Length: 189
Image (cartoon, rainbow, N blue to C red):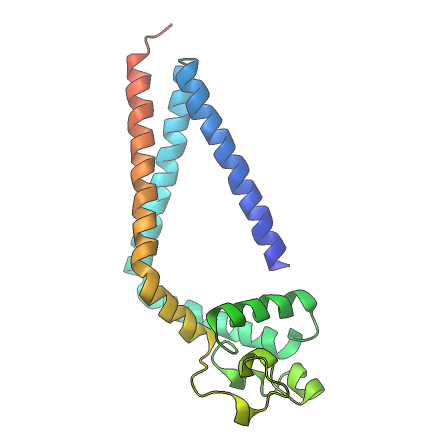
């Protein structure tokens, strides 16, 4: 269900961007001060929200450990109760574990008391590089939990994420400057 919600979110963001593009382009072509100022104000609000979000993340980074701990408890609960029973949940976890080359949230032990393990008497095949049956003895000690793999991914690609975020902020600043300059150049009619 969460994947469907992410799809809806992406469609909503896409629709919002279309409206924003229309406001900016149409306001410039029609020389509409109202459209240009609306475009500027909306971009300014988004920019301020991004800056505030970055400040909160940097200032309260210690709270992220509490959030991750809570997220881990929820994730392990879903792994133990729904993995293997709920097709959507199983597909999401299988894809995550396959892409990050990991097993479970903290490790393969997350499956130890799960309904999947009780029903099949084995761990998910992804934990053993798709070897079947997947028993504890056949799981490589190099296989980490998905949290560790995700943290490694972020540490390796954090600069890219930061660069993309700075690029987006730069584009927003440029859009605000251009719309404000156009607004000022258009005479009151």
